[in-house]
Amino acid sequence: MGRYATISVLREVKELLEKEKGSQDWSEFLLRLYREARTLRARTAFEELRQLLSEEDLEGVIKSSKEFRGGFRLR
Image 1: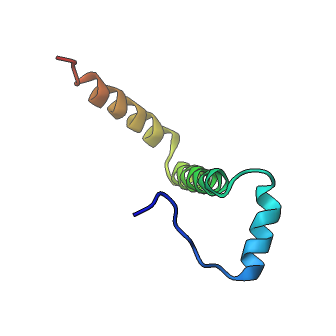
Image 2: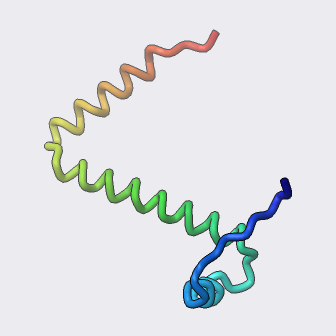
Image 3: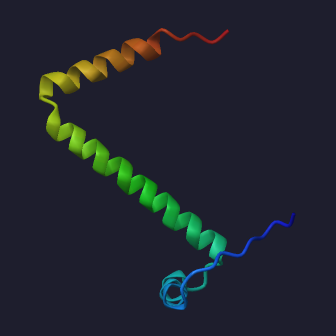
């Protein structure tokens, strides 16, 4: 099996993406889109969670996280 694969998409989609990718190769462009989408989803989820929790809840999460990480030791 080779290193490259072909992905079938509508011609209109390819034309739109080609304009956006500019001089990047397809691998670089698609990886950038993937990373941006993943980062945006994480930020959105964090903001939604932040709106649901009170300041006291957030402080408790931070404290618990520090205690949890403090329990690990390198051997």
